[in-house]
Length: 180
Length: 335
Ligand SMILES: Cc1cc2nc3c(=O)[nH]c(=O)nc-3n(C[C@H](O)[C@H](O)[C@H](O)COP(=O)(O)OP(=O)(O)OC[C@H]3O[C@@H](n4cnc5c(N)ncnc54)[C@H](O)[C@@H]3O)c2cc1C
Ligand code: SF4
Ligand code: FES
Ligand code: FES
Image (cartoon, rainbow over all chains, first blue to last red; front, side):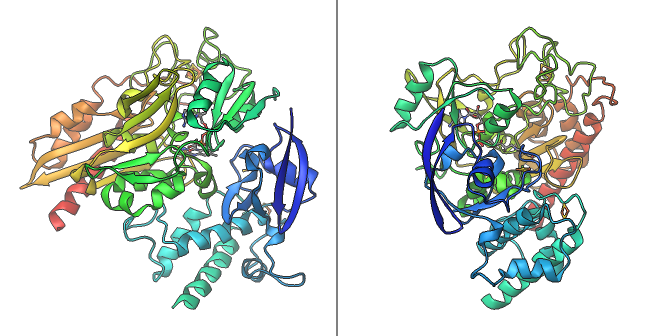
């Protein structure tokens, strides 16, 4: 069954007709040419399809396009502030060799942007010692554990985890420094 | 995937009627379970009724000091709520121990307890499964049983319930607010899920068209000292092998009151009433905690399986329960 909807992707508004069965991921990749989100597993198990919807990270493979009429979607390709500029997370990934083949990278980058926001809001995670108080960003060891836990929904088949942790830690540190 | 229609009725009442009148209709919330099942062919609805905008996305204070959690509240927002973190740490810990950050931003309070088992045979339409196809048999019995039940299973189904949040809610005496074709009702959370018996196709007591509108967590002062501990094959982003949700009130070295629910052991989040009874009035010692674990597991029946079976869950759960209670009692003496 076909349905019509509007999606805002990386700042551009699109009107499209899709089958109700179409995932947000397939709508982005196959209908709108937004190919930075990747299809790894199509079952919510790898994080390669991570995008930001209304600023929050979600998995585009388990989202039905029809249920996201009017959504504001940001992909890793749309994070850059300008045409020849990098987002700080992009820059940190390059600086820390946080990828090898690059297939998981757009999902990792969107997830990292989500993690920064969640830390900023003081959301607890499964490794937060004091759930009521929130994550302890002053302790580097705690920050590393928080990053590993919060990024665990993004698998990397090349095993670039060491670089990914370092890249995210750098951006967390910069954000934390800017806040002080 | 079977074609389906998609509807967003104007309100919850209309949504209930829309599903009730079509046997092949289903509710859609965050989609993290049902969309996977559409793709796997495990669910084949002809109509999806999206309820994310029709139930509350707010967490309200109840007059007794408890909280009413709207069915559309996302798992991540619930875990982040300051009232939940202060009053019900066990819930604030259970939520982020499940799934991933992306999934928790999608998953809802109504959908989470209604997620279906992760039994691999249930998810594989090429194998017999009484839950997916009543009467077809159970491929898990004698198959790979590492993740299966040790309590309350039947000869028809040995699946476990996969939710972490639900284990915490079972310990907290939560109540489920339901809107059905015949009106509203309230169901104690511990009565929501059923044991498989001879009808494993049912996971819960809800009828077709019954919509969860909210979950209430009552005031429970002892829950300020509570904890969720989950044991799994990898440190994150994996379902529980076993888990423990516990609230403990110790006074003068004695257990004054306690709530315990166990995950990964049964077709439902398992409220361990026998362990609670064994503990009330007992000295707050490892011996008591071990006796409580024994009481909880009196009827445990491990499954054999070609993967080595699941007898390991008995010592694993015992150790997890003892250390969780010990930690909670330790917090108590420090304050
Ligand atoms: C890779 C992966 C890992 C995961 N790991 C974990 C984990 O470790 N721990 C854990 O607990 N969970 C885990 N999950 C499961 C996840 O938590 C659930 O899929 C989620 O909570 C379901 O909520 P939802 O809103 O997305 O439900 P949906 O998928 O939208 O719906 C689920 C079911 O509930 C019904 N439904 C939804 N809302 C209502 C309502 N208000 N009233 C009546 N019926 C309703 C639907 O019809 C459907 O049958 C994992 C999922 C994935 C994909
Ligand atoms: S354990 Fe239950 S869900 Fe798994 S195959 Fe058997 S009947 Fe199906
Ligand atoms: S493609 Fe979405 S999680 Fe793997
Ligand atoms: S860089 Fe290759 S999968 Fe992560």
